[in-house]
Image (cartoon, rainbow, N blue to C red):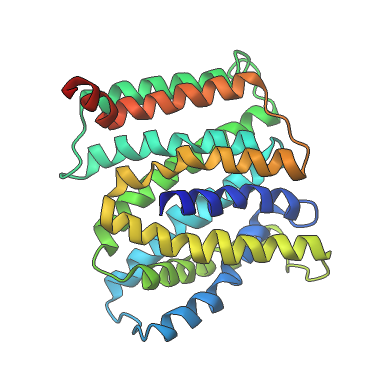
Length: 289
């Protein structure tokens, strides 16, 4: 399930890169959830699921819409105007590290440990390698874009905890539907204020990218997302962000001609080591053997 989720989420960086040719970032976020909504509605009707009536559950959906969609989608899509999709996906891999630390701070059944703190430090070192020594000295648009992706990763980390606390008892498909409803409610006024009324006069490749990001990277992805969250917990779910970059980089290289600098690969390797330390299971197996 994690591999499937990594593949469709890796594709979201590729689809966004194409859509950005004609559509502004926040409008892409609205397209992504707007076209996903009817598809999810069909799925919940086929499953004969009833809409929840508890206001607290809908508050949970609104919070998930903000933390897991509206904020990170908009930040990452904006960032992709400045940096390649592969670099964005690598920085998004810090979600695994942030997810473990945030879960450790906020969830009693996933306590904060020395491994999580050490892993966070190592992961941040990986981010520093990717961004380079001039990142702090000179805040150019490219550096700001990388910071934006990291902020999106932090938002994803809080979303995983929010979802586990507020929505763990709900069916995964209903959670995905409710979250999308919350995102649309948040994004419509923002898009109208910032970008104006969305245009429908788009090229066929851009429409294809928007439908791909809605059907595959949103509908199918979030059904998997909530199913994994319930079965494996918030920290384990964040493993997916370490699996996304190979898919995103492969698609970007194959179809968009993107080339990832060696520093980015080194930084990604350091981030992966950081999460391995945070998670701890790999090293415990070596110790047992």
